[in-house]
Length: 436
Image 1 (cartoon, one colour):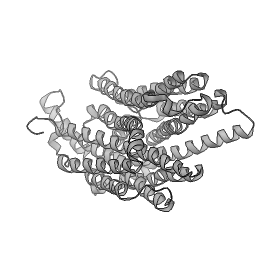
Image 2 (cartoon, one colour; image 1 turned 30 degrees about the vertical axis):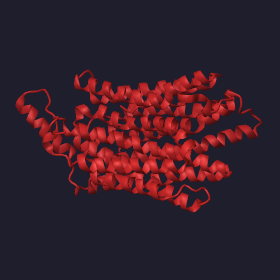
Image 3 (tube, rainbow, N blue to C red; image 1 turned 60 degrees about the vertical axis):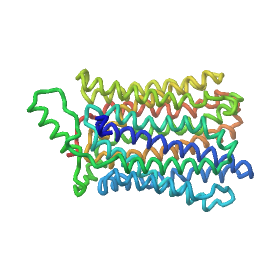
Image 4 (cartoon, rainbow, N blue to C red; image 1 turned 90 degrees about the vertical axis):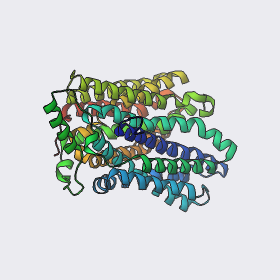
């Protein structure tokens, strides 16, 4: 890599992209493998839901501790340890639906381990990536999630069919250990000299680079301003939008297959590769958002604040419109298009709120990410459960779940949240650094 003269920060960003990819391959893979194994012995839906949800309970518990650990121990070390932990659990614990207690505990600890990853990633990126590259770097890193989900949905059903559910866990463990080895070999603590020079007079350039270096590499003994973080309106703007993003994402991920089966009379097996289009669209739009944001900021077309607000607003409002239009289509193709547009523009909006952690608190990006991602994980738990209650209430009222009109509330709730969150971000967010 040194001979090729690739800046080390690019290697770090690429490795974090692969990291999020592997994480979501694991999440999708377990859901596919466990569902097949559980259905084979007729495990009831309540127990299946318990096993599948345990990951998120563990995940939400470790978000803020993950930010604290990354701040104190270093994001590089935390990433390595958390990756090794969940990989070993996947490889060593048998996927046996009859051993429910073991599965509950294993999924809980996998969730705890993976909960450290995203706060650690934001700490690493805040240290390595200069302000003019942050949007596309964070967008590329997070787009790995969507590509991982798409790949998992495309390849794992065939793997389960030919080699059994346990094979998925072994593949995930191998991927996790392989990434850990690569991370250990090619990552390092950020040297201050790796930040790129900015086109400006020589003296000003040196001063700016020095200021950026000091601004993004926080001493591990620095006091974390918890009170200011908790009561900061710009931080709450990020938290609200993170909650809404994941509410919409998890509702579509978990309930769209049921919508296809009940309202459109079409199973996922009959959809072929089209079922991965919404997630592939997220991958594309996430990177488009990052490139556009950095272009607007670097060329000084818009300020950082206006850029974040513009992309966040466009992403969330268009997503809301697509969600409200979705139940009006009575065809699979129309539903796929609406869900793809909705998730794609949600991903575009990440160039607004999701990068904003490093704008407002570059020294404490992992901490702020931990706080906002806690809200995002709770949104998944709340959104999936609330949607089930909405459908049960509709069924109790003798409403026909095979009629797409019955599903309007399911999709309108996240749509309204998207509009509300975009307004909150417009009013309270900032692109300026507020935590020194």
